[in-house]
Amino acid sequence: MPTITRCWTRIGKQRVILTPGVRASKWWNWGAVDPVTGRTVHIVHRRRNNVGFRRLLAAISRAYDLPTHPQRHVILFVDNDKAHSAKAVRQLLEKHDQIQIEWLPSYSPELNAQEDVWQHMRRRVTHNHYFQHTHALLEAVQQFHQELEDNPRTVLRLLAKWAKLTSG
Image (cartoon, rainbow, N blue to C red; front, side):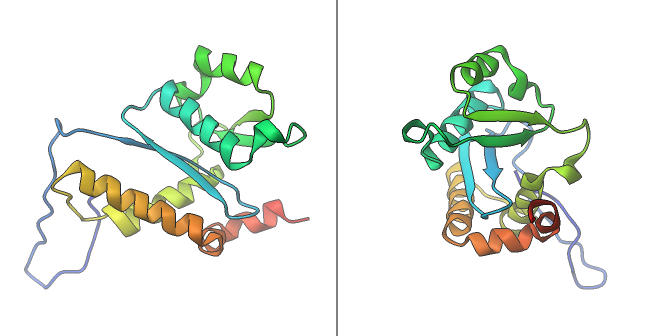
């Protein structure tokens, strides 16, 4: 979906940004970021539910090669979205204890490093931009994430405020 935001225009002119309407198909972009290394993991899922979150957990497990390295552990800080605490998620985490969930306080996006990545994505991909077809939007999102995966230094620049918390 386009994110409508302020932009420069000529005096007396108003920029028109098309929107797909409320019935447009939606996809959810699930992601995690490592503020120490700049590594990102993401998946795109049709719905905002625990299935999407479990797919993200599986992608994290693959990215960190957890099945072949039982000594590795990942701490994942999450907000209070109901998908994160679903029964199926709790059961999955009980079986696979290498991923530990830590809960962020309610209504505190400023404590979630992933929010900085989402903000950057909106600026680069969706702000004031209408995609006529969902596949074009998905392709732009995939390309954005690929650029981040290829260049963790960019991610670390986005997360500069987290360097103090993670160093030492």
